[in-house]
Length: 116
Image (tube, rainbow, N blue to C red; front, side, top):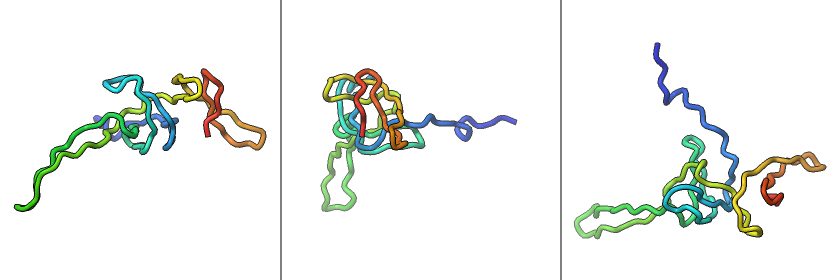
């Protein structure tokens, strides 16, 4: 019996959160930075504010209406973005540390900067 690759697909946990500042590390928008406005866990993709803009042409629905061109942010795979430090102006991986109160806090590996 063959198993379908779509049903058995396991996605890695996304280590990014909504509101994180990220830098694009691959594709047309490479080296640009922006804030995450949405995360799609099912496909491991993120939507970054103002980046990866696509154009959609919308036809008029009724006779009197006019068509329009809509620009929107398309999702980017989470492997193509990296957390970004504005203070050091550098992209970095992150690790999780536990503070004195037992809370998990994310930390940038290159700079040691703590992320909210």
